[in-house]
Image (tube, rainbow, N blue to C red; front, side, top):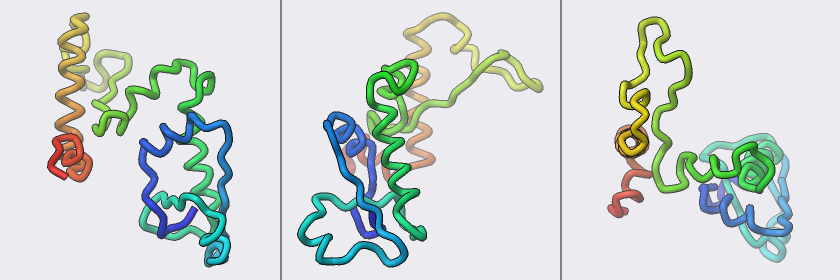
Length: 145
């Protein structure tokens, strides 16, 4: 774990969740001795453009992002496959019960029972949400990158 490593992305977690074992080395304060980095480290990962006092929290983020993909960790093993970034899009908005709260209503299409229309709405919402909130990811989705 290091701030100058490759930025952690969902594709990394997907790949590492299939491995039998991984070892995470966490530096503290200024990092890991350069000789160790040069001769033993196979992949350096950053969780963002900021510095922590040590790599332990970054490692916890990495472990969580991998662990949730391992069968049996989550109740619904398929739910991780529809999360943000799995298809280079953010997830669509989430609505829960009740269908109206403080006068705010769940979109009618979600209450319609028409699973085809619901899926189409979710896909459109995911695309629009990604376009407006994360244009960097949207470029990957559209192939503009």
